[in-house]
Length: 131
View (cartoon, rainbow, N blue to C red):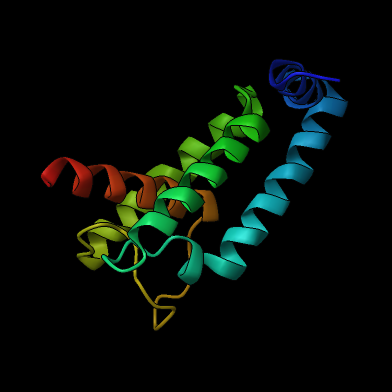
């Protein structure tokens, strides 16, 4: 029987390096994570008062997955931070307070989905500290 640390170590071994196969596996994981966020963002990342506990669980689960997928891969992390800067810049230009719309109206999903995850994570932390 494998322990939790063994599972995390094996997951890191799959996506933790910058060799070609690790980057391929991490890129596939990133696409799956991004597709999940893109498809279910409104139900997974909504930070309303009624859905706060489920939002905390969802954001936590998705952030854990993202940490395994990105696993300090230089290639993926550099791409993410570039996407994050663009996400924040676009939000400021539109006058968004938090960079994230609650619906998929006019703006839709124009940023990297993992940026929405980081944004929801920040919104949860800020609202928790404000209480």
